[in-house]
Image (tube, rainbow, N blue to C red; front, top):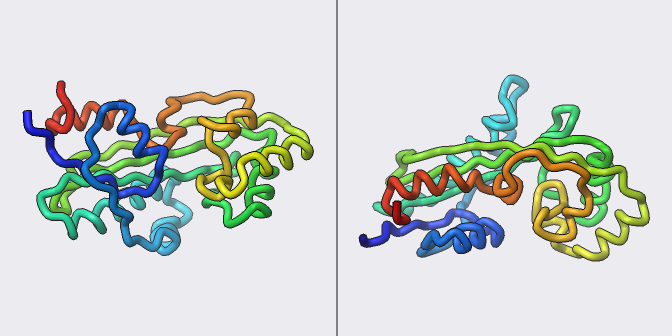
Length: 202
């Protein structure tokens, strides 16, 4: 079988590592030229769910790259965090913003939504979405400062300011849902789609 080329429209090293570890051949990585804040503002009305916003962002990212790469299978994804009171958080801008987000999430349960889209020539081939619930323990202020010192600038790289595959796991008392969803992809249904598209063997 000749592998179908797969282009990853995401700069996330975690997503790329997940695909590589699963044996998915990614032939190229390209960052989509999408104003995420503008898309969120346009699609984030009162009646629009967090899941729908994440799916819209993944779609826009896939479209931005797919139109520039004819006959190429493009994978794009997005992840959003919804707090216990229904607000949505973006990636923290800096350490102070990360501290404020983590204090807000401390002692509460939030939802992490991961959406993904496969597209070819501007047409959706597959789309999937999944959510996980994560409960942060009531950690101390001392622990929080130690955590921020430990992760350094990486704290701005993910929504919520943590990576479950790193020291961020110590922030939590409970995680419900697929760990791959927490890491940024609904990986198992994506793998099933990639099998049907001959990207990987059945």
